[in-house]
Image (tube, rainbow, N blue to C red):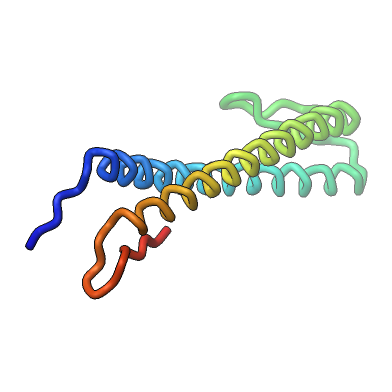
Length: 122
C-alpha cells in the first residue's frame, strides 16, 4: 500500500533538498575563496623575499607595482577574504543545523519498510 505524504512532510522534504543544494553551493564557493586566499598568501611571501619589480593584472593588462603598494593591496585583499570565509563558515553551520533539524523531522514522518521511520542521508 502506497503511503501519501502530508503537505507538511512534502514541504519539509523540498526544504531539506534545497538546504542540501545550498550547502553544496556554499562549499564550492568557500573552497574557491580559500584557493584565492592561498594565492594571496603565496604572493605576499614572494613580496617579502624582496625584489624591485612586481606586476599585477589590471583587467586584461599587466601593470608594474611597487613592492610596498602591492603588499598593502594584497594584505587588504587577504583580510577581506578571511572575513568572507568566516561568514561562509557561519552560513554553513547555520544550514547544517537547519538540515539536521529537518532530517530528524523527516525521519520521524517518513515511513520505512519494517521500521518506524526513514533514514535521510545528507
